[in-house]
Amino acid sequence: MPELPEVETTLRGIYPTLNKQKIKRIDVRERRMRWPVPKEVEAGLGGEIVKSLTRRGKYILIGTEKGTAMLHLGMSGSLRIVTPDVAPEKHDHIDIVLNKKIIRFNDPRRFGSLLWTTDEPGQHKLLKELGPEPLSDSFTIDYLFNASRSRHVAIKQFIMNSNIVVGVGNIYASESLYRAGINPKKAAGKISRQRYAKLVCAIKEVLAEAIEMGGTTLRDFHGSDGKPGYFRIKLKVYGHAGEPCEACSAPIKQITQGQRATYYCPACQKN
Image (cartoon, rainbow, N blue to C red):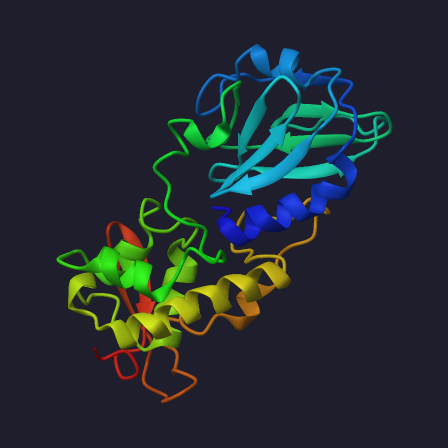
């Protein structure tokens, strides 16, 4: 599933082609996505100039004079840049048609979405409760430590909660906790401020490195240029169950938390 680094990589990939450009039209071949694609998308984007192109959480926001389109890649979605002579393939559900290029949205599982709002996008029901961006100045040690007080939920699930902080998906949560030396099963409220300082730094470092390397390709994700992300070559624990830890040689352990696989080193992450 595309996480924050993959979405950010996708945004950076389409930015030079789409930002400040005039959209000729929107071709919707399949409206049955996670939510039906509203007709307002075509009217709001077609014939308009893109005034802004940003990201909030895992949503790519395309702003025009009329409003904002909110695009989510879902479980298996991707955007790629093609020329008009390239025929749509299976699962190519939506085209953003420019003068000489097309931004093509492919989503085999149809868990992605393209929605429209005329209000300030940050107040949309899908965005207004989101926590801070992890690479922003508002994601601080004090913020995360204070938010964790009296919380009994496991730390891994705590940092994966998008109302606490956006974009720390399953892969990046495991890798960040490993770098910080924190056991993923430990209650969020039982972790000291000093250890949260290490965790905040680890989260920022892991996500920044993943973005720099184009994300992590495990199954479906490819960037807008069709190339896979390469952060997986730097994964220290995720997907390495039974293999020796690079730091101490203890075998990496795999458990299930919240129906998601968690990987950690039982020696380096005792507490």
